[in-house]
Image 1 (tube, rainbow, N blue to C red):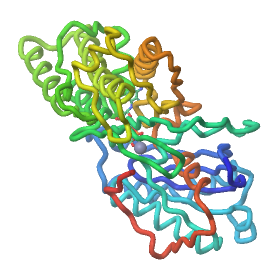
Image 2: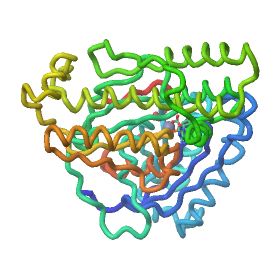
Image 3: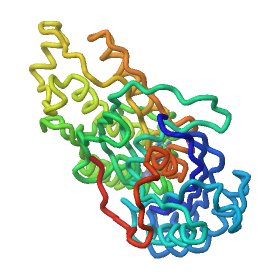
Length: 384
Ligand code: KG4
Ligand code: ZN
């Protein structure tokens, strides 16, 4: 990790989970979540005012519990134990972000510690670097890394040259992958969030029963789009249920078909990134060029990417993980270059959590002057 191992408490209230964590270096000492799933389920999505209210109700208890689990106490005398505080400033829901930021400012004042503003997407991107408390030493990373952040709010390909140096290679131009899964799930009355339910149902489904579109294949960049698939799924569900109510097998088949196409699109663009003749110029390998490579008529360029990281709520999905491994192994067959997939060490760190927020803060210099009073929410914050 280069820097000395710091003790950092972080808060994330960017969406519907009140999350507080304490990290020593990359090791997670405590990770507390107050989930709001029950509150928002009836709306089929997150209701910002209710999210704010629930964050306000739970934040103090979450901080106390995280300190207790990390063996610290919430008193003035203990203030020197923590090297810094960190808080998500964006992207996220403005009213929800505000609660975490205001509470973090109060704590920074009380304990006289620096308060570090953190980008939530950066945190998902580097979440595979988190380690359990028992970890002896963090592993050495072989940069550059390609991070895939696939969540309910984001779907992005980020080139990490080193921690803190990011370039966004591609992103969704409309809905995110998680949003597409959630919305299709909502049409099927599967509750919120629907991603995990669809994954379960898809296991019993036939993924080739109905053809669904694969978007962005003719667009020569690394961007994604899921709104067309969402609409096609919507139309298919309407068509099928107009004749008779959907039977259980049809719901499983729909889950399998939709999930397959969401992941197919991610892998389609991942493959293009790997075969890009010049990633520095984000050169897109077009259809003819790829055909020649696969027929071994021309030699495949060897990508500078050495590792692939996957983070964000959808990263918990086993089928997505397997499909990415398959893309990487196909790439290896052609180029002989082995690129390994790295994931957060536990599924709970795929979804929103404050441990990943504290992790980003570990790489920030404490010498930099952070002015808590100037820190503000940035709901549309981007990376790179
Ligand atoms: O990272 P996250 O907790 O929040 C955002 O930053 O958006 O991601 C939540 C998203 C939801 O869309 C949810 O349906 C999806 O992650 N998700 C899954 C799975 N678990 C969570 N999608 C597919 N398969 C899963 N197992
Ligand atoms: Zn998130």
